[in-house]
Image (cartoon, rainbow, N blue to C red):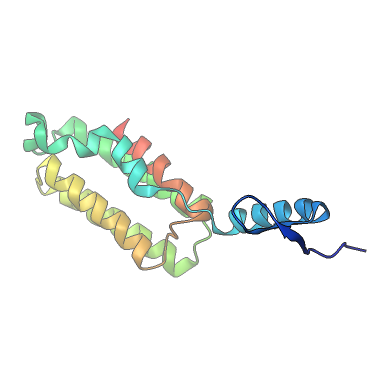
Length: 155
């Protein structure tokens, strides 16, 4: 039998009642369960940590389109990211097709000669679109894939 969670009759420091000692394990368990269900990574914080993207506008080499060698490397990286998303995230078949379409668009934009800085903006827009349309959810395991995507892109 679970002991009831009750407040003691004597207020603590700030005049607020405290929990009975028997309630502490139950409250701690509840807090952990809520955290596990509702923890969302700080995606903007992850982007801020990634200096390749945030500093791209200031770097001269990002004003040019991708070279042939860079396009080959980008094609491989995009394929890796697409594979990672579609195999590790709980995405239904129509969602997987949306991911494929967006990554095909990204590769096509790079091949058409978009400057690297512009392409990075397109890339970010495509990832945000996958989140806002519900294909990638910004919390749980899906949210944790965003730092992996950024790391793959900048490597």
